[in-house]
Length: 147
Image (cartoon, rainbow, N blue to C red; front, side, top):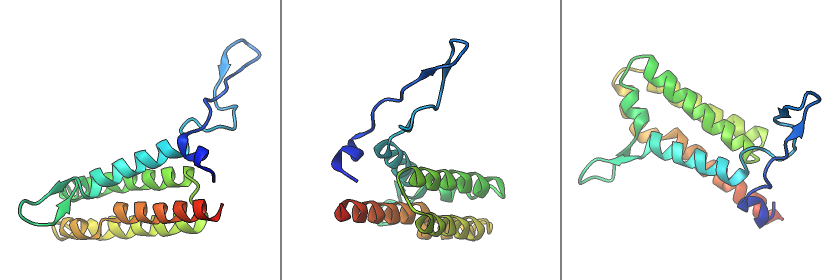
């Protein structure tokens, strides 16, 4: 991966269909480039895991802990958003093994986070999305170092 890959891809080319309308998705260049996908994933991870700080402590928490207080729906919603972060990581070039590790983190967080009240306390400390972003950054930095 070169430095140009991080700066963004060329705009998508739109081909004309036989009826004169535009076909979407015919170009090899993705709609969202790798840099944008990574930025979206990082933003969501911070929002879910470490957006706010408890005053006078180093403890940070995010929407995952707050929304997790709503039984079933809260953890299901944050689990889906966490899965979306993994999808974005895949678009950044994460391999199958890395995606499997990230999904395991999400599953572990979703299952243990679904325990009423104690699950939200677990969410404050486990921070699966931040872990996944660290895994993705490590993977991408190794890819850049290899080239």
